[in-house]
Image 1: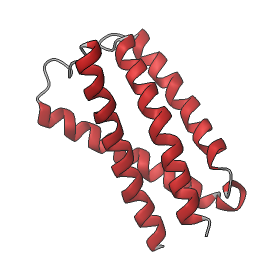
Image 2: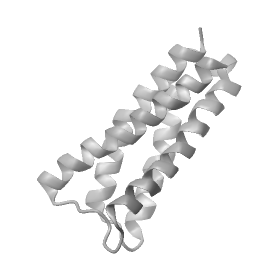
Image 3: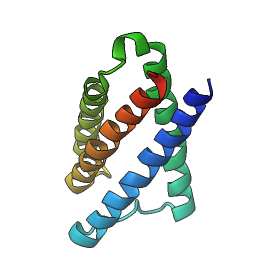
Length: 126
């Protein structure tokens, strides 16, 4: 059980930090900005809560299905990546979300999902 908790914490760290690095680069290169009308503290808190839910689901789904998913971390990451890419596309079609933000999101997810899946597979399949 301690590996499950460790996995949740480490996945949360990965999926919280990687987007900040990508969006930081995106703000320098493509002019991405934080949402208008929201304080930085509110924005960061909202991101943290959202990423906490994602980390919990990501690790617990793998844990429950580990007998089938063990060694299949790339497939697991791909399934999550597809779900997130469709989410990015859907958000960019709506208001208050640009294609630049969607591209930054896809880049982030392309980094943190395989890394997180490998980590979870390594910690929970042993």
